[in-house]
Image (cartoon, rainbow over all chains, first blue to last red; front, side, top):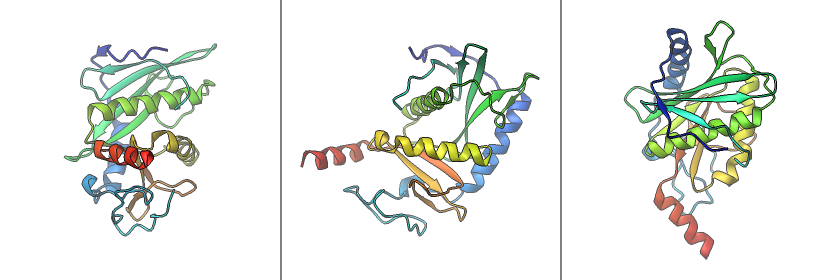
Length: 62
Length: 160
């Protein structure tokens, strides 16, 4: 199937839709408040492995 | 994802996508919404289903018999979004335990396919961000496009 990615419309969320999304956004905002995208952990099998952030113990090879 | 995916349309602001889930019985218009978290480069992604009232929900099941196709389409949309916003990350969680687990299974299936292209993380209950691992429960998932130099490093390793 072709992806009709070139079609652009002025999509808007209704107030009801916005309410659902806002709830999810608040939830994620709490979860990522300490996230630094420039200092994310890397997989240990990666050649550029660095120390995981936030005290992660998940450094084993996935 | 190997599965085919539905064609999708993008809103003019690049933050709302729509596609149709099609079965013999019905066609359901689904919406994927991206919302920036504060002033960060992290976006929440939500898959919204229509209700009979015309409203959308993220909590109902459409039971249209095309779940793999829907998930593949959402994955393609996330990839499209991250190609447009390559320094950003997309975060999400399932709206209930069953759906959250389903997302984890889908991510697990795709780990090998996205290696070197996308980085996938889990956010724990203690708000630690860790590299996603199968069979580990996370509160949220985070997907980010790999940096170009990361892909080069993997290529070098492969050649050696």
